[in-house]
Image: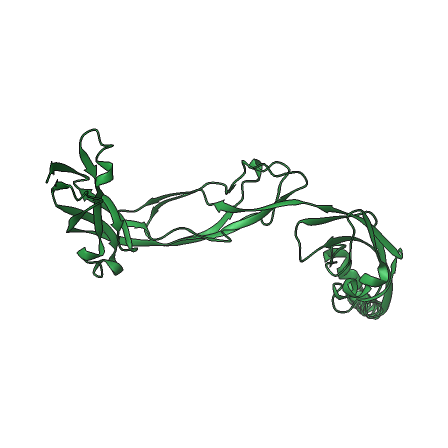
Length: 316
């Protein structure tokens, strides 16, 4: 009998706890579905979408009364950051102290709260801020990539950067010596295929200077190459009419590298080689250096044999 009583008692406790749990759940769901008026403090970041050189120091935070249901109110405490960014490029501003009325930014503020939240009021009535005009300069980005390639592979074309230049800004004059933006070095070794990734701007080299963005996308095209040799006649430029000039040799062997795709398209007459007689008087040895006047864009590397030619000069 004692075992039966214990079983019935345990069953009654279970049923009691079940109904208490159900009642609490129902009460909680009812409360969460009810609308609540919340008072929340926000910091406003003003910006001008037409001119990144302007910054605004907001002096006062605003207090917003927001109507939302219990579900949103509970999630709001956990996931939301109380910062609102507002574009004031449509406002006429002076270079000294400025202000906007809360009523003027009410709509933009409300649009950023998201679904399920209704803005009731903003206070104070006026938001004060100061405007600072920054010095700015757009500078090229230097990727600082350290690349090595597997046998018979080379980089094809230049490194592609997006963007390849960025704006920098400072409250004081930007030094004239700052002509480029360096990225933190990255090393990629034994490459046999194209790579892409993200580079970070080296902020340690930019004292009190802000950058438009801190990360740059890059792509390096890598292709397999092969070597070919062709012989090209050498041209002499700026020869005086009063002299006979003989160059030796008159044909130059070119060894060049190109990717497999373009190699078959390259012909000997795509190369133009020349020596300039005007360089003869400057030459100590009396030899002239061979210059490449034209070559196919797809050629990656060119070696000349020989690099210098002998010159024999006589009067007519």
